[in-house]
Every structure is written in structure tokens, then in C-alpha cells.
Image 1 (tube, chains in turn orange, cyan):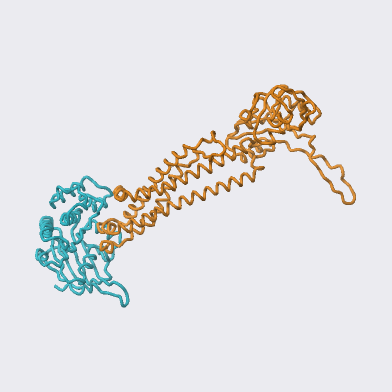
Image 2: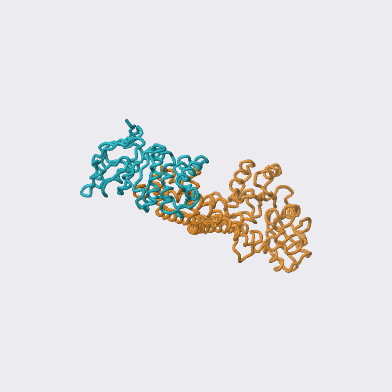
Length: 402
Length: 226
């Protein structure tokens, strides 16, 4: 149908102003589509990086056993309150064999063994309750990128070293290089030197969290063997559920995805994505209506010519193809134009990594340019079918008489 | 005896229904021999244009038979009629009816290009030859809108001849032209009829034009009357 293509092209180039306006209208729709894709995608990435980005995506943690009930045969009505025994830390004892297996799983970027516990920091008369995490020195920034949050010192951990948050340091008037005593909830205490101060920007970790080396934590919590938990980081946040199930199947260890505790966040992201989808759908509907109405007008204007073509022996399918191809070409031109302009405009926004509060968190990589062009071509082609069918039904006798 | 090209019998064409019903053709019978050049005469409303439209397969009769080249066209599908029209019938209209966004040559080769799906070198060559024969050698690539009325009508004649049709139907082909242009167009039609044996049926009110045809067919009240 090369010849039908030529006729389509000729019709479009014969009415340059009309074609330009039509292509421009389609391009605006494509631009909106791309802008919304980049904005919604960037916003989701931003929210996730500021929340789940610093979380363990999959956590393997031994299930704590609650103490047995002592009251078995009480008479009358008895109200029992069973509280978790925080003095009996659950331990993972046989993880060494599984660690290499987990590290080799698809999408796993980091695996961090940790010993966690509570304690009190004491310096002179000042005390502060803290949660202590013992990590392997080489994996201090594996889960939370502490290095990026460091405001003083270094994140290197070793014997006798401790990393604390900025607020905790301020509360206790602690500075870099000063000593502090950490009394673990096991009753064991140790003198440690503050070698790094970080500021995540969140009250909890900055005021109530401290990091020591795994070896130091073994001493403090009297755990010569075993660990409290394993935290795992993935390349794809959304693969956490599947990865957790896979780890459980392979290792038999209880693995928890971050999504289990982030239902509200996921709901919010889903609602946001739905909003974006609706806006993008409206943009596509606008394109369809615009192309269909313009081609219907063109069909009406060219009725005598369609009649002549039919009289000269052009089959109905030829007429349909002429008008459908016009829709496709308008869609392609508008799609390419809109995508090009969209990309150029998005370039003006700071990249995701350079994002500053107050700016739109646009991710240029999520512009969905190919999808936008493809959907536009398909939509414009579909939009052209109705006018094309109307054109093919033109009665040549009546049309030539016009 | 000349070979019959077109044979219509008891041809009826009715428009509208009930009180609005109009019988334009009333049992019309007509045969056209191959190579004939005939004039179709009759007053307005006599059914000339309707007859041409049916003979051109642009419209089906309400009843009756319509044979051409051994094909029963009264019972053919729209697709078959379209193909038949493209291959065997040429049209020349009163108002030339050229495609305005195309050159003279592109208009002429349209019937072949639409059949073959592309503009072949052979089609271009024939289109050029026809335009040269029509005296339009210097207008081949001119936009059709820039041609004069007589030139447009000659392009239309060339287009009608492009696929070497057996039958060319011309509806008032000179009705919109001055006498000199009308004669020029009729000279060309006569020449092609003589040289190539193409059958022409020319509807006209002009007796001078009719006089240039070997046969005059009179239509009145939906029937051939003479």
C-alpha cells in the first residue's frame, strides 16, 4: 500500500497549518504523558529512597520465644499479661552455611550480619538509653549508608570504637575522640571511643542508636557465637516479597520483607501511581479525540475527492488505509515531537541524585518515552479508524455531485 | 455484425419510497457495440445521468440486467464492481473532477497506481504519452489547480484512458468549456475512438457535439426512445 501512503502524506502536507496544529496538539498530550511519568516515577523513587532506601529489604530474624506461663491451674477469673522477655534475645545460631547462598541470590546487593541489643551510654553524670547494633566493620554502610550521613569522623569500626547520632552527641555533650561507657542490658560494660558522628535526619536513629563492631557486640551481649539477625539489601525493592519467600524456602530461616511493615507507604505509592495513570489516560483520550475530530473534518472536506477515487476504481480498503495512515503519521510525528520536547524540558530539572528539597523530584529516566510514542501512534491510528470507515462509505455519485 | 460490449435490458431504477418514489429508469434497454461513439441525448430528468451512473457501475439498478464483457454486473458485489470499473471503464465528468493536491501526471496515472499499489515507471511513461497526446507536454508536472478549464478536461480524458478501458462514459464533457476548448476535447475523443477503438458514450445537451458522434441515443421518460 505504498501508493496509499503517498496519498496520505500528500494530504497531510497539502494542509500544512492544519497538520502542524494537529501534530502540536498531539505533542502536548505526549509531553504531559512523559512529564507525568517522570514526575510520578521520580516522586515514588524519592519517597522510597527516603524511607525504604535506608531499610533492610529482607530481614532474617530468629523468632523470640515467649516465656512459659507459670500459672496453669488458677481458680476463678485471672487476668494474665504476657510480655515479651527482652532479656532473652533470640539468636540465629547456624547461619554461616547459608550466608554464601543468600549472597549469590539474584538481586541481592548486600548481606549484613548483626547483633542487636539495648544499653545505656554513660559519661560522667550523663546517661542515655540506646539501641546498639553490632555490624561487621566492612559492612557499616551496607544497609544504611552511614558514610553519606557522616558529619564528623569516620565510619570505620573496630575494637573500642562507637558511632553515634548527632542528637545523642549533643544530648551528652560528646565530641569526636571522647570516651564513653556503654553498659549493655546483659550487665557487661565497656569503655568506647566516639570515632564517628552521623546525622540521618530522623529522631530515632540520631538520638537512640549506636553502632559498634560485631566483635565488640559479641563481648557486650555475651554472644561468642550466633547473631541476632541478618539484614539484606536488594537492587529492586519490589522484589523483596519474592526474595524473602525464596530465602525461607532455601534456608528454612524466617525471612521478612520490608513491605510487611510498610503497607501504608505502599498504599500511598499505589494511589499516587493510579493518579498518574489517570492523568496519562486523560492525555491519551485528548489525543484520540483531537485526531478523530480533525480527521472527520478532513473526511468531510475531501468527500468529492474520495468520490473521484472510488469512481476511478479505488477500493474501500484503499480509502480506509489513506485515512488510517494519516492518523498513524500524525501520531508518530506528534509522539516524536512531544517526546523530544519532553526530554529537553526534563533535562532542565536536577537529576534524582542532585535533588534538593523544594524542587520537583523528577526522574528523567522514567519519562517512558518509548511507551509514550508507541501508545500515541496506536491511539492516533485507532482514532483514525472511525473517520476512515466513514470515508470509505462515501457514495461516489453523491460526493462527485457535490 | 459488431461485437456487443454493453447490453442492458428492462432496466429499472427507483429512488425513494411510497409517495416520494420516483421511477427514473422504466424498463430501459440498450446495447453498445465495441468501438462505437454514441451521444446520449434527452431533456433534464430523462434519466441520462442515472443510466451513465449504472453503466459506470457506480450504482446498481433496482431491477433488470446489465451485462458487459460477459459479466453480469447487476448482481456483482461492490468489490467486484470496483475492480471492474478500474479495469474496463473510464469516466469524464462535466467538472473535470481532478484531485486538487496532485499534478497533471499524478492525476492521470491514479487509476493504474491504485490498482498496482504504487506508481510504476511504465505507468508514468503511459501517463506522459497520454498528456503529450492531449497537447499538454508542457503541463505534465503542473499542479492540477493551476491548469485552465480546457486543460483540466484534457487531463481528465487522459485519466479516463489510462487503463485502456473498453468503455469511456462522458457526462457533459464539454458542458463547462468554451467552444474552442470543447472542439479540442471532442477532437481528441474522436481521435482515440478512431485509433484505439475505445467505445465512448457521451451524454450531452449540445447538438453540435452530438452531431460529431456516429450514433445518437434519445432518452425520454426513463426509456430509450430513439
